[in-house]
Image 1 (cartoon, helix red, strand yellow):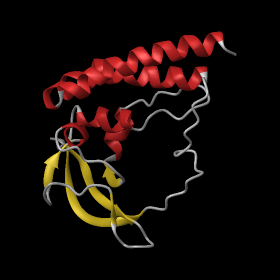
Image 2 (image 1 turned 135 degrees about the vertical axis):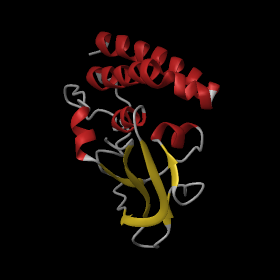
Image 3 (image 1 turned 90 degrees about the vertical axis):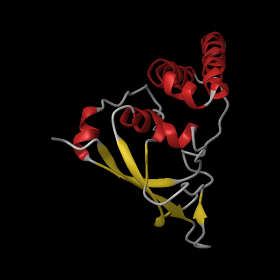
Image 4 (image 1 turned 120 degrees about the vertical axis):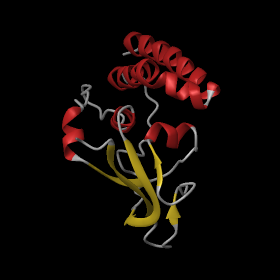
Amino acid sequence: MKSNYSGINVCCYDPLTNKIIGDEYPQDGLVSDNIELAYKYHIRGEHWGTIRTDILKEIPFPTIKGHFYNESYLWFSIALKYKLVCYNKALRAYFYEPNSLVHNKSYKLDKDLTYMWLNFHWWKLTHVGSRIRQYSFIEYLRLYKDILKGIVKYILARVVK
């Protein structure tokens, strides 16, 4: 019988200050999932986890031309079926690079990027929305706002080339 646990999550730390980056978990050994961590406990910031490889192989990761798909897709997909255990031990140094691809805040009307975000928000609403609504009705309504905003941006991106 396979375990219903996907792995463990721990905290990250700033190697310059040795301080934890992001929020600590409400308690050591917390059994939860990434949907609950985000919307019930409001855990934000960098964390690090180990995930069973057999679970990673179960989840096909979408590819959108020219862009990285949002990693929350993976964490939330796993959360639909599996739990994880969280510890407040800081085991990974996190190096912040302000010019990295992850931190690029370009707001150009990029058709492919806009499509990726629209696709992700639609997936989130249809697959995770009921869980989000369970923890925060405001965050659930925000999904609709993000989808409407994405539709407008996508139309504009197709018109303005």
